[in-house]
Image (cartoon, rainbow, N blue to C red; front, side, top):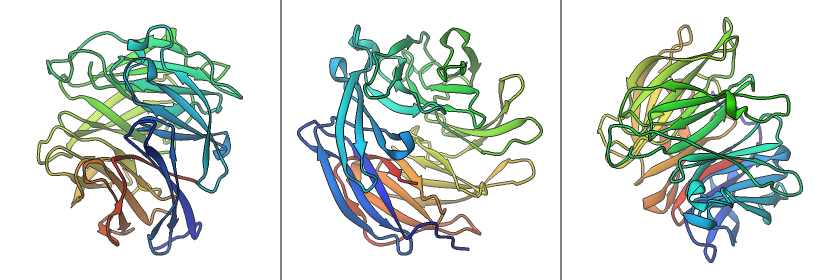
Length: 360
């Protein structure tokens, strides 16, 4: 089964590097062949390790995964054709730089008016309001630790997203083994004072999450990948009570590299994909039972070194992997029936790629 929404997409890649280096790259992605053709590269933005669109694609937001005073959020104007112009910047914690250290993820609120960064080394989240300018953020620090004395000595928020109904923000904290949840207020911002915590297995290291978009019997199903113990946790979000309840655990990191990273569902919701790093690098594939949404291992595809992030094209035909330590982007055709991945073409060279984003 092959569906094509567009013959070509713009693929934007964020990579590690200083402001003097080219760190944001755009490519034409041919949805018929999987061919990747360079369009543009941009310098002046340090370590844009995560990217997100806002304003219907007219704005590109990039975290600056730096330490200290240069850690921040950069706003870029997009022409929709893969060309970007920086138009704004704000530190993730202007008054106390250490609190905003190493922002590694960002999400835009459902109303498009706020952006939230997860500050890994700062142990906090920063809530920005943006329009023509980016506001000074409201910074919310976390407290606590986990049993791993090296990787969980302090809070390390790694991811933030919103439930499909737009009523709840969730933050995954690798350092404290918790999911923090916040209701969204009438102005579209998270209600920091109304936080509720979901406690995960000690030493698991919650990292990224993804939701199935459809509601069933008043709840939504999501999946979370733990970085340290390498398990996928299936959880239920109750839309009426706002509660998140972990349900099952399924091993994804069979090599026990303790470096699971990213997680995505196919557009049809039939397959789940997880990237593993540090040992046995590659993409684990799971089939999703369409009755109870449980997952079953369905394969594994080795990739280049350190597949930190990957993305699936909107048509579901292609999965593209950013292999940071191989300095490469790899393209895989996705089989709709089996979920299997087949690499197409030679790897595309890119210096330390860590985030892939498609224009939809």
